[in-house]
Length: 187
Image 1 (cartoon, rainbow, N blue to C red):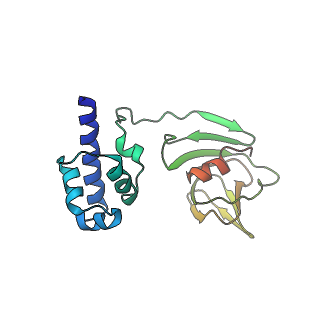
Image 2 (cartoon, rainbow, N blue to C red):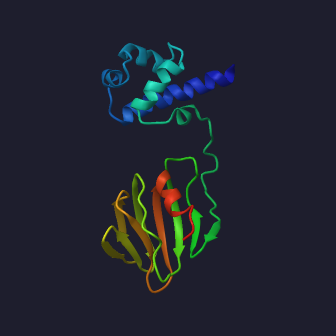
Image 3 (tube, rainbow, N blue to C red):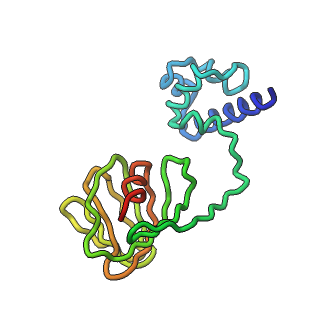
């Protein structure tokens, strides 16, 4: 039973903290959830039991997954130890844990005669060129991204990227769809 109490306290603290971080009053959060401000207050202060019928709308209104609210995962080991995996002309190091909505990846791109076929997917991609030069195709446009430069773009535009003239290393931040489109396929 102590475990349930511990989880409830963690959830209460997270709900209050998220509401405050988003700058929402009890009334504003209530309007987003169809719960009363007093119900939300009683949940945050421990005077009301947390149940799914209140947790689901609160999580949605606070833009967080229920599993993130309930997780007791420890941050004792914050260091990520990436290991390389190669596919075709790409070597990839995962720089973030696979459980988040976004994923940070380091890629080493070897030059190829032609770029991969441009693809679209929902979301947004961001890349930073650590070394080398990268050709970024966005629809009918081609953009050269140099060492020390970054590119950010909507991913419903057909897009592809590859190294120019020699190897390039990039850091990329993808959402889930981008991860599958760019990392989990043959380069």
